Length: 164
Image: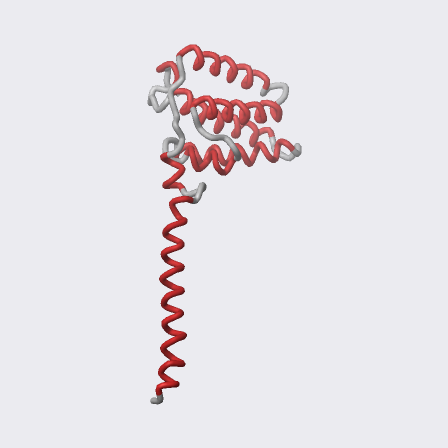
């Protein structure tokens, strides 16, 4: 084999190896910086428990949301979503958008996460008057599960130690 042929094979191969190694190195360098990276986001929220008087205020607000369900179920679902988001913010979770909220919640409230997603989807249907009453009722149950978890700060007995 001539020197020209060897160089024609070796140079492109070397360039390809350098590009592959560079791509892997760049990917590894950027991966921890991605804002939606679950590993990064799980540690980032600086959450904190609520004082008892604030917890009591949220319980009263939830009671009002539940009471309006009879006459205005779509509005109640909307208000439940809003109240959960406000509670998250008060606990220290970032609340920029829904997908970010789900990422931030997944570490501490993973078992309620799918229910939260389902409630949110039903809320979107309700906003266009396409949700059935049964779906709206289910959304309220799902929002309440996450609400209880956020309010109880991980206490298995639920808010106020009364259970769920």
